[in-house]
Length: 231
Image (cartoon, rainbow, N blue to C red):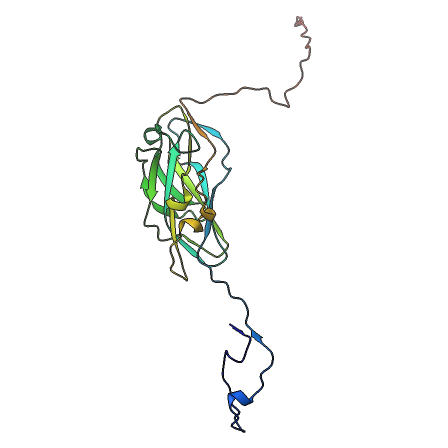
């Protein structure tokens, strides 16, 4: 509040009983500015793990890492995350990811806590899984959590990516103090650009690389003397 003139309030003399009109007022009273904010988060996919090849049959593979960071206004409880998979980082096409990537789950990179239940991708454009009803993921003010996207590779021979196609609509949450739900503008500043992991290539077999050890002796000539007869 800002008081700039005597029309903003009325006074009277306590001892004298003087009326407001008889009292001369001087100065102003300016309060501090208070900014009211709501819950916000940023979402990004880590550059780790680097682009890697995996052999068919690999299981428990961390295919990507989703990093969620709360704003500094209040704690945020994340309630759902939609993860997409595709053979392109825009997540705009159909692919065989739903056939070649199975047993998908979200796991905290530090505590090992699971967020939602293990699922398989649903066929779509792109293929996706919805982790809903999350109750145990709360971000402190200004703090981050890293969610590993863990999968199995039962088949395939393609490079795939995982991530969030549209963070502003595919991640939901609520402010712990305000109880206000995250709006589209509260996630990545309203930017709808897809966030994607590095590529994971499925191979039908592995490669064996044979190389010389660095401490292998250099080639030398060895003279072998013929045996002497013993008489």
